[in-house]
Image (cartoon, rainbow, N blue to C red; front, side, top):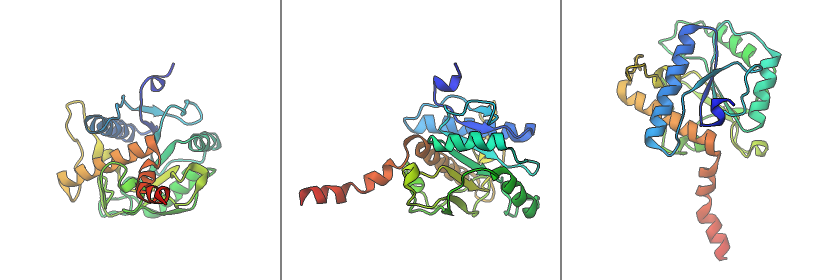
Length: 235
């Protein structure tokens, strides 16, 4: 029986690059530790997975760092579509492309993202803002930084009842895994720029919001409607 069937784990899609996969593993481990210490979510260690080969059903959230050499893969896309259709959330991260720190070519990354999402059922997207449930599923947030800040995050446009108005896909370039990462000694091996420790804290908080959103859906949006529901009941 897969370990993810016995405890809650996050998954990351293997890229085939040792350094990227290590950052994904350390990043999701750091996020899992942070969430376990500060919320009721008790997280196990993250797993590297290959969609189309590994069973994705046990993971609430999959993190996918997009690399320039990613290729179209119908088998992978079919597995990810099934994962999202059954309530899983897929997070694609182009790892800082578009920031001053990135040395990657924007056009190459756009092409890579197009190949990665080929065959995926991607709903209409809108920019994440502080009105979205993701901004208050645990912490109250106005920004959603990772290792870099100021880059937009894209989520499904609200009003999609097919998935209970929960976004099945999140796309951004914040390079979150590097911000969340902890090494074997418990240290943060990657600098967070320009905001330092405060920005890293905000990145962790966004990660916790994301994790709880993946685990609980839009329950916070339902809570916000409670006063109006009680008023109607009184009438």
